[in-house]
Length: 254
Picture 1 (tube, rainbow, N blue to C red):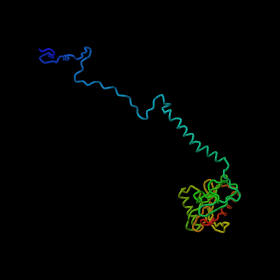
Picture 2: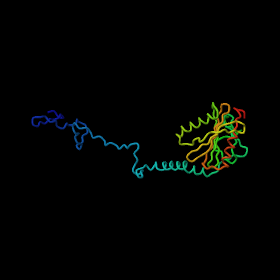
Picture 3: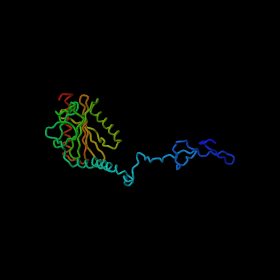
Picture 4: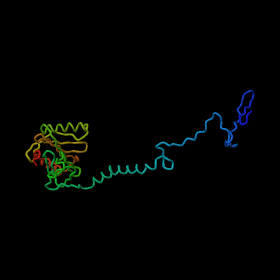
């Protein structure tokens, strides 16, 4: 057999390949094991890939992510301050904008009324102090303790009695019969300007008051006063004075 050629051993009549001799000049290491025939090389072990929401154990407290505890508590405290603390402060702090003698409130469409001195503005604009938009608001509210007086205005076709009926029907629909309702028969009220309107008493589970309506040249005006059922006579007189002070000056005439 020629030198350098591979040799074949026979066992039980079957040829078995023997180790192949390396060619001349090739590096040979006797300590290198033969590679297993027909077996792939071992794959590397897979790396641990945690989910996006996985939190390490050292960053958890009672099962919660430590990083979210402080922001959550902060939001909860702010919610408590806004809903409870500020309400208590508002209930015990005097009004920042108190009605002075001679103040007149103007509404959209040239409607005005004289608020009672000493009451506090919660919304509305004094006559002569129009907003930057140039249009006065459609409503204004003044308060004195638990008594509230609000005047609203909007276009309306009809008379004062029809306006009162519409307000009553709308209020019943919105409150589903559980809010303040008109009680008794409406009567006529005359403003200082000589205009006549309609006035009626309103009563609720824990409140009482009056509602008055006027219609001036296609513009409806609603004045509503509410407060405790046992409101004092002085407050009642002040409410009637504010209702009678309602005037209409026409669009852009003031």
